[in-house]
Image (cartoon, rainbow, N blue to C red):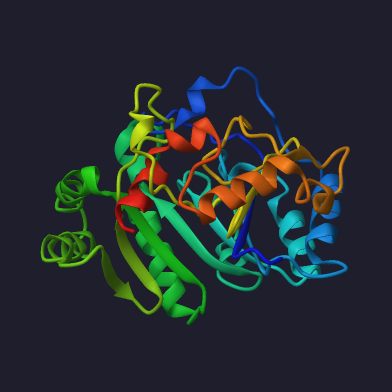
Amino acid sequence: MRFDRIYIELSDICALNCSFCPHSERESHRGVMNLGLFEEILKQLTTPKRLTKLVHLHILGDPLAVKNLDVYMEILSHYGLVVDLVTSGKFLDSWNWDMFLAKPVHQIAFSLSAFLDAPQRFSPNHLERILEFCAYHREIQSEVFVHLRVQDRDKDKLIQYLRGGSEVMKNLAEALCTQESGVYRFGYKVFCTTTRYYRWREDSRADIESRDRLFCYGAIGQLGILSNGVVVPCCMDCFGEIKLGDLRTQNLREILDSALYRNIVAGFKQGIAYHLKCQRCDYARGLAHNL
């Protein structure tokens, strides 16, 4: 068994309240994953047999908001894992940028939609700083991938905002206007990517009878681990509604041998969503549409 990626949520803290994110619907806070649990998880991911080589430090919170993120990064490096980061960039200047532009980081993605949703929550020069980060990436010839991500519904808003900024911002705006695909190469290993908007929280009114060919990589190509140790099938289950197990009291391989996990995997391999949450998931429906 091997996964393409494992999502590990260091915390559910992000200091924002984006309209497209279920962050505000939380009934309680999980807080920061303690270092002991984090290291134990990495041990189980790498011994006796490596289950993945790629870890995403994101489900609900912003990893850059974790005050000792550098320590978590050192532990990941010790276990030979590479890291993808997803962030709003709000806390970018809290860190030395070099940490994000060298191993173990493989990719850092900035959510521009988070900024466009509530620019008043960010510094006035937020986009300028992200573009300066991209310029620094080029200056030091970093091999880390940088993605500037915007949801398709926000693309016009982003272009309008960029047109009111510096010459570099204006050039990016014009490039996005002529963008034929969803990805624009802004520089070496630096991309501006337009992603599909989807409802993070499933629609309880969704017609679940239309699930005849529903596929997802959840539990097959990926797993999610919340900061409280709860294991879920994918990064969309940010509230642990499909609880596969709890790494505070169980071993990961024991969890992967459970009936619930095996039923979810078997279902998706047949194009069937076993769990009601999956049946109503807007992201999974988008994947099924492309089958």
